[in-house]
Image (cartoon, rainbow, N blue to C red; front, side, top):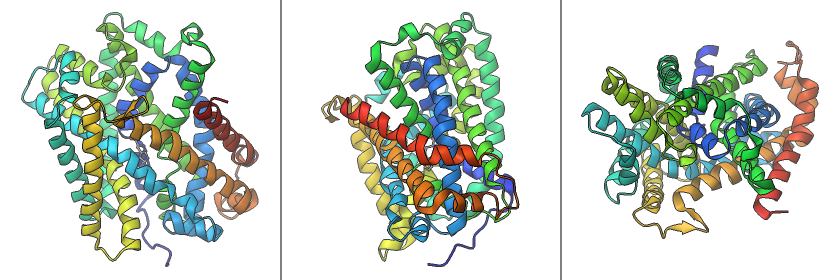
Length: 445
Ligand code: TRP
């Protein structure tokens, strides 16, 4: 296996591509609704603590492993220790799990673009009615997957970087505009309070608190695309003089900024229009149309906004599909195009069941979760934290902090100020946190 020779064309391009993978439905759709169902500000505090204790050290470890080895996720881990290829393998199962629910939501977004353009009414009930239809959502799920597949087979190398660099700044401008509008709605202050002033009395005992903590951990992994080897691969395209620490902090800051702005755009509107913050995964699909319908030029803004959400989702979904396709290509004799088509079909089948499980056939459930919820539970709360756990052990013990720090400091040329903190979090705090949260929430110990 030769080290990849491909490289990002600039530091800005790399940051935009990594942020493009991180920023997606996780920030715009999931973050506001999980905050809503997890007690608002209490969740936000736990989320920020986890960003520091889990997000930053694991992201930095993944980039360092990738740049050190210069290969795909599995081979990079293997280069550090021949028995550790499995640590990079979580991405393949994780990517499948993420995609199975991502494509359904991507399909909803496309439907909402069309509704915005044709100026169809999208009342709050519309979402429940639409998402539980049996046939139509499957078509838009397929369209979302076809778009993803077409981009992946068409070759991504220059593409991801270019699309993300343009998209992200536009997205930020739009989101800030919607946020400002939401904040001026009547009663918006209630939403702001819900988001940033913790109300511990809203937590229903220890098990509720653990649920919030578990949600926050899953969201950190999901939103930053961690534990799946994606950032190992991205790190492998980095030049040796890139400052990994500052890149990490920039990526985390951008991803968090978008999530926070989305929170400030959605939650005040939720309270202003009298929706429930605990609504669940339909939250933005109910709230945003209500916001847009009040704005002058709302139809136009709504169309553009949902197009931006779609593009943000696509820059994430292409890198998810790419993870699986790249692996299938190395394991089989299939060409890239066939590999992409077959994988897309398999995801589509899983996505169909996920979509139907929401309302049309509620019997498709695992335990008390619909299949749709199960896929996201399994990927963000099981696979990604496990992947992250092994990345910590690999970096902290197998590779070792001195070697990792050597890579992070570019062979001692840069000062690695956070070295102590990095060592302690990677070796002890992050793995212990993941293990304890896992044990307590899955097994109720
Ligand atoms: N972070 C993406 C989002 O917030 C979703 C995601 C999770 C992802 N893991 C990934 C994207 C791996 C690309 C690669 O929407």
